[in-house]
Amino acid sequence: MDNFHFDTQTVHFQKKMDDRNVSKSKPIYQTSAFSFNDLDDMEDFFRGKKEFLYTRYSNPNSEDLGEGVAKLEGAPKGVATSSGMSAILAGILAVVENGDHIIASEDLYGGTYQLLANELRTFGIEVSFVSFEDHTFIKSALKPNTKLIYSESVTNPLLRVENISEIVRLAKANNLVTMIDNTFATPYLLQPYKLGVDLVVHSATKYIGGHSDVTAGVLVGNESLVTKAKAKVINLGSNLSPFESWLACRGLKTLSVRMERQVRNAQALANTLRKNPSINVYYPEAVSEKGNGAIVSIDLGDKIDLHQFFKSLSWIKIVPTLAGVETTVTYPLGTSHRSVPDETRKKLGITKGLVRISLGIEDANDITMAFEKAIEGSTI
Ligand SMILES: *Cc1c(COP(=O)(O)O)cnc(C)c1O
Image (cartoon, rainbow, N blue to C red):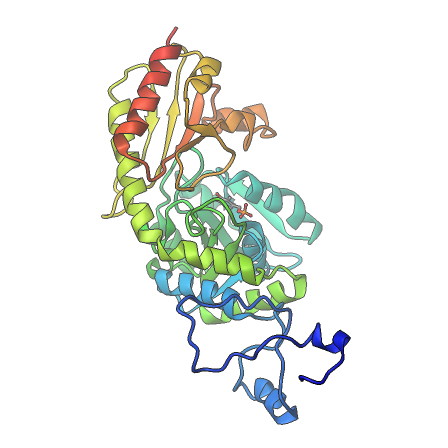
């Protein structure tokens, strides 16, 4: 290439890597497509001897993320997507089509509720939202065209723990597919696939990424459903970019150590706040033998000035997400549940004093101190 003209040199200046140079960190395959040396080499892709052709179909970095989470969930196959929402959509469209019916829990993540309630209707897909606290409601919602039962392993923001085995049993008895959003629990705490769930979905934007710097999703599950979902991802163009995949993979490597600390901090904060009789603490029990999650929700009741409380939190910021390494708080009534009708809100327990706390990896003493001070300084 040395005797090429300037305009050619500017394009072809990079050295080809050979396999004597092995990078410790997985390289970012920041490419839209893969190149071939000759027609036989290209034919190898179609013979199944080569994995990659075009990044929207598949890329080494997004493949790493999908397969990595699948392994941790104990599932045979996974696919990475552009967001948690697109992972949910791909999973659902792998199961239902025009004319089918879904039974979904009524206390879903706000975005999922919007997708199911508003968008799926335009595909001719019917959704019934019922309380999953008592599974007789699921039974009464069954229709001849029901195909899917959808819920979350741990719900937002009141942290109800789903009885997954019971849902699987009910679904199997009625020949239905089950899909569970496992974002809050993560595979560190719960592995719904191992309990018989067909499709497990994650917003990797949360604990899998873990650093609030990437928007991503992952869907894992049985071979045939995830293969179908992957075709949806390809056709809808909701693949995850190489760099975002790489970032999420980097996050995934530290999932265990982050969760271990964050869960411990959550338990410590819940224990402390429970000593205050004017605060109602939502923190589940018996989620798994590794602990009960890293989110604590509290209802400040009417003896604490809400505005003063948020102002007094010093280094703890109000952030409308969760799961980062920093401790943060959100106000569900002002953000995620802003557009939920009053009546539904009341039913779901989204009150004026409700605050959701996402525990970070800081020292538990500093976190507890910050909340105790804020409560003390805002008590009426
Ligand atoms: C954030 C979240 C989603 C949506 O994920 P995005 O990555 O924002 O698209 C879905 N489910 C739950 C439980 C979430 O917390």
